[in-house]
Every structure is written in C-alpha cells, then in structure tokens.
Image 1 (tube, rainbow over the protein chains, first blue to last red):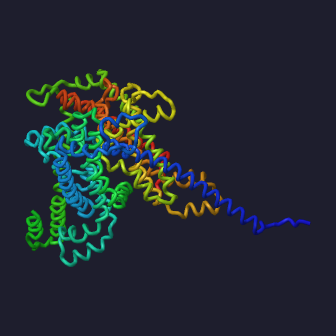
Image 2: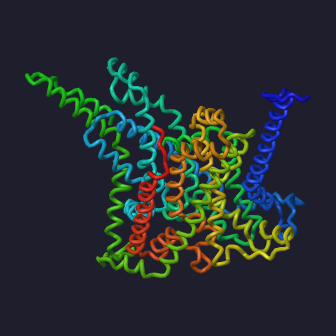
Image 3: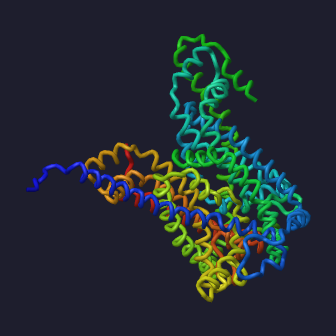
Length: 295
Length: 316
C-alpha cells in the first residue's frame, strides 16, 4: 500500500531540519559552557583580589574562604595608599606613558612617511637595518644604554625611560610605513601640483589618513610603557620616582605577609586601568588586532 | 628646523645647458634632505639606542668590567665562564622548559577559544573578559597569583582541599613545579592578546570558502582542517613567533613571583642577565650571556622562518 517516496516527505524534511537545528543549539550550548568556564578562570583571580582587599587580617585565614567579607574592611585602602606614594606613582606612570606615546606617534609616522614615499639614498638598506633591530632583545642593549644614561646623569630620572622609547620604536616605524604604502598616491600628487611641500603633505594629508593605525600604535605602546618593569627597575631608584609596577613590586617586598594590604595595593594599581579599558575596550582590542594583522 | 630644510630646496635656478640633469640631481638632493629630516629622530634613536649599544655589548662581552674603573680584555673567558657555570645552565634549561610549556599551550588554547568565540553570541563580552590580563600590569598579575597559589590559604589549595580532599603542595616552593606553574600563569595572561589576533585573522577569511564547502557537504571538521587552518596559518605563524621571542625573554613573572627561587630553581636567562649585571655588577659576563640569548632567539626565529614553507600558506 505504502508508496515508496522518491523525495523526502514534508514531515521527514521537517524533522531533518529541526534535528539539525537541535544539533546546532546543543553545539552552541556546549560552546557557551566551555567559554563561561574559561571566562570564570579569567575573572575569579581578580574577584579574589578584590575580596581579599576588603577583609580584615583574621578573615583571610577562614576555611572555606568567604567571598563576601564581613565586615567589609575599607580601611585597607587608605592604609595601602599611606604606606607608599601611590598617587605619585600614578602620576609618574601616566605622564611618562603619555609623553612617550605622543613622541613615538610623531617620530614613527615621520619615519614611516619617509620610508614609504621619499626616494632618499640608501632608503631600502636603512629600512632593513630598522627591521633587523626588531630581532635584538632588550637585554642586549640594556647595559650600554644604562652606561649612556649614567654618563648623561639621567639615572633615577624619568628621562632615562622617556628618551630611548620616544626616539626609537622600529616596530612603530614598520607598522606606519606599511599603512602609508597602502594609501593611494593621487591625493598627494594633486597637493604637489598645488605647490605643497613634503611637510604639508605629511601633516595635512598623510596624518589624517592614518588615524586608525596611529591610534593602534598609541594604545600598543601605552600598554607597553604602563606595564614596563624591566627598564624602570634598572633606571629608577628612589620611591618618589617609581612607576606603578615598580611601586607595587616594592610593596610586595615590604608587606609580603599582609595579604589584605597587598591585595588592596594590587587593586589600586589595577582597577583604574580596568575602568579605562572597559570604556575604551572596542578601540583598545581592535587597535591591538590591527597591529597584529599588518605585520 | 623645518624651514632651513625647505630653504635649501629652493636654492639656485638651473641656468646651464644641462638643465635636465641638474634638475634631476637637485630633485634627488632635495629628496635626500627631506628624507633625512623625516627619519632624523628615529635614525638618531636607532644609532644611539640600538646599533651602538649592540656593538658596545659585543665588545663588553669580551671584557671584564664592573661598570667603573678599569676594563680588561679577557677574550672568550666570559663565554667560557657562561657555558661552564651551573647557574647559566640552570637558567637556560628553565627558560627552555618555560618556553616548551607556555608557547604551545598559549597558541593552542587561544586558537581554540578564538574559534569558539568567533561563531557565538555575546562575542564582545567574551573577548572583553579574556583580554583583561593584557591590560593588567604583570606585577599585579604576579601578586594576584602569588596569593591564589599560596600554600596555606591560597584560593587554589583551599578549594583543592575542601572539594577534593587533596593534599596539594605549596606550588611555588617545589623545585620541580615552580617553572611549569609560572608557565601556566603566563598562558593565562597571554590568551587574550593571542585570541584577539586570531579573531582578526579569522575575520579576514572570506566567508565564500566556507559557503562553497557547505554546499559541497563538507563536515565541520573537514572545513576546519582544509579551509580555516590553512588560511589562518600566517596568523598562527605570527603568533607563534611573537610568543617564542617573548617566552625566551620571560622576566617579570619570575622576578616578582619567585625572584628565581627556591634556590635557583626558577631563574631564567633574562633573570640571570639582570642579576649578573645589576646585582653583581659583572657587566662583561652579563653582556656575554645577553649575546648568547640573542643568538638563541635568532636561531629559533630563523628556524621558524625556514620551517614555515612547509605549513604556512600565503593567500596571494
């Protein structure tokens, strides 16, 4: 009686489609479970940090640990802030990073423009030298740089951190050169016909066109400066000159056993940066992605 | 500064018969001056903070010098001392162990997370969360993990005891565990950055490839291995190189979490370079170790570039 259907019937096709749909749902559910576990692994240490920073000393040793401190011990924050000059360190870190980023954006974009557009002699050879220096680890140049800074009398002076970074960033030169190479030349040609010189072309035509890579480079080197421990540790010696990472490290040396104060200090160092990150996260993440694509 | 350069460009009007060649030479001279003007600051930086220091460090590596006073030329003695010292060999093997765990670990985990995040709702929220450690200073990360890994009252051991009844070790004080643990923290800290680069790479793959494969009935697994992975291979290569170079230079986590301890069980090459130069003030010896590190990084990178022909596909 039953006819043998050559094509799947309406209901069969329907169940096939809905089973695919169920499959996709399950797959997405599993994906979310994995990602949520991963995300928790990322967040929990920070929550633990904040939780500890709000406990009194006795609560730290309760097992199992309570996540919500009772009573909340706000006093750890003023205690940490008074123990070491944190406000000062914040100011130091901020202004060093801002000065370095601003100078790098200028010098790197100038060099990037020259390498991309001006046919000066030995251009390619010089560019290869720039690229080659990307391979040199910082640890090779640190001793001579230290001696140069000592001869200039700049040890324990912020200029010893600012000058080398402001004047030299081969990665930044390379990044911006790649972007400028990719710009169409017609705009510049018409400007030349109008009698504009190279300085005006650079300032009025090139710079506005590379805003996105400039922002990306700026974010990238700001993060690098802000987190810099290695050279800051070598060049700076008095706590009043310390940057945030350096001060935090000194804090660890002094209060290693008092975890509540330590975590309050860590929170003070981390949270303002995280707030800036939350506000500008799209630009920050996309900026980092951009520097990664244009190698 | 700018006006003087502009001024030189407008010097003298060509009046001789060979006006064409003169014009050409004038144009190339103006290009040279403009070039010098624009690369000037970075060229100065290149010379003073890279080229000269590298040469200087190389010379220093053949000398004995405490930073002040006499320098004596000692030939290869610093290199001999480096390779004979058990501290250096320890630092080298810890660095290699750290690299062997953290680089594959970070590349694989961040690639997997990027693949999962790429096709899912709330993508931006996940991306935001995984990226958190990238904007956190490594000192703060070290402190947080130092506390979480604390043997007696740390987050991890407390829960290992109460949930699993385990008897966990004091992680950072165990000689055999300390480097792998620091490598795990480093993976945790680097996932977000690598993931963002991978996501950017995934987005640059044109969806038409996957659509075509779907029409041909290719399974998800086949699509991944035959389309996604080959087209993503330049990004994988890039992330691997960056991670390798970074791993060989590991310093911050080690310096803050253990300062090379217990004993020298977690000292790495850069930690050793730092100690010899700025704690012991043996600048010559430290420079020699730095040159060895340079050579290792160079070799590993060149090896990667040589090896990439076998597995990296460039789509042009």
